[in-house]
Image 1 (spheres, one colour):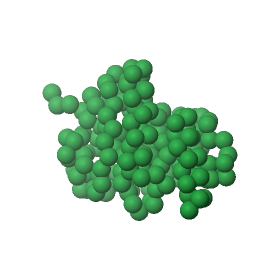
Image 2 (cartoon, rainbow, N blue to C red):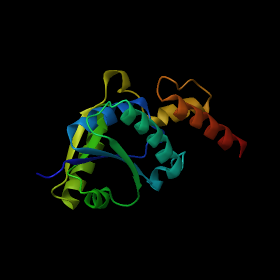
Image 3 (spheres, rainbow, N blue to C red):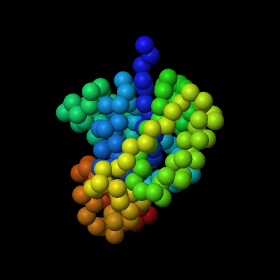
Length: 172
């Protein structure tokens, strides 16, 4: 029997409670979940890939320690095509979270392209939890930019990193 390896890709700039919800729920859908932090320079992320990967790793370490999933979750960074990374990891599926109808068209297009590039790779969608369906990383960054309280959207270590990064950015 082959292992079901699922990849949950994203820029995670920054990691939100919505992402964490998808990680916890998605980890129980297969034999292995890899949270794949994407370089994705086209999005011009606030945090470097190393910073984003470290923030995700810190939260995943807590998830694994609390045994909130049936199998430990891994975190890896990657650049290039997701389908190439999936092949390297021997993944069988990609996991994506949907917040609203507006997400669906983009995600549907990406799933179709990924299927064309890697015919055996399936895409699975999880709906965002009700309390997280409106949270988007870009909104969290904007709130932090104006020194707003982001504690209901992101873990404490991410909030601290956001505020530090905003101070660095405004100082330059």
